[in-house]
Length: 500
Ligand code: SAH
Image (spheres, rainbow, N blue to C red):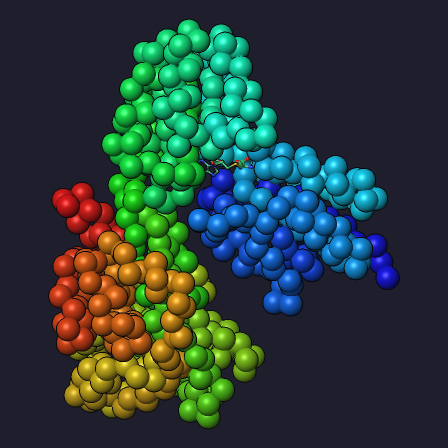
């Protein structure tokens, strides 16, 4: 049996983007993951399905697993020859008891590695606009625990020394004791007017900051209802926040926005929303099931060169048409003879990525507008291909037939209802916005989820067709995009958030 190993890994302060490359690599490789409470959401998502995941953190109101039991657990699992990742919030050696665990491992002769993480005492202030050192204001920084080990006695913090400390003081675990901490610092000589900031849930989407002075911060924090986890930053650098604060100034800060697109496409919208400060909640209502192996699709691809017009109605359609072409040894040249029409700029962009500039892109991105543009083409008696979703509306093929075209409709994919994820449903319940990018997302969302899921949230629709579907499903549309693409939807949401 090969020897096991323990990795003492820091998972950062909460923003999953602040997990190190090494930590992610090790989570993927782990046979066993032993973790605390304060690790980023989804930090364990890359773990193997057969990995053993053990939670040893404290549940609110009950005791945590004793430290020596945790060390024992790590040692046992490593002795079984397994790769053990001990995952902790922030940095494992900053108030993480990683030092004790490392010592126990060393003593037991178990190989281990330490993987530092981004510590909350640096990251939470940074996300609040406070540099913990500054050339003019702070040439040193001290990390201080606000929650003393009871065994060490009441007064083991040297407040005289802390009061004299020539730089920034960062207190961890000090929400409850804040009145005591600030009183003692002032009694020991620290200026009661010194800028002080408390950052709650730093780097997380609902981060909050209370900025005050050392003398008044405890009152301000209790008034604001600040709860752990939070760090308290004492020192002139805390005032820099007035100029540097950025997270909390982003236009969608603190807004929870539900993204109902299929998972494969959700990330673009989710990413755009996150950059603007929102917390995107991916709750895909649909999933795309390719149907490019069907006889009708194969036949259409074989005779692509003979169509006068090829109509594509979605980026998914474009992607799957090209996949179907490739499967039959074709490429973009198969479209050389045809006029190519795209509904919407997203569809046109997907074509452009594959080397095809659409000839017709309607000014308004709904099927009716495309028909208007197509009526300018001479289609009487000409073969036309409409490649799209199985359950699409009939507006386009019918209108083309009225123009005298011989229309073949092929289904490249089906949109199926996605199984909703319970965790995402729970988070969505308190959302500020729910976004819909197609009628099928509306229909499946309202069918699959509890009726009141979006109660209280504002409904954002990408365009009139989607809005209509929403109204049919009993949802009042609060925001409709003027431009019916992702950019337009984000713009409309931003404008709404600015007004509310
Ligand atoms: N090893 C961790 C600290 C563990 S002690 C690290 O290096 O960050 C737990 C304390 O860390 C909390 O009580 C709080 O003071 C601080 N903390 C952890 N995550 C935080 C966050 N997202 N925002 C503010 N403080 C946080």
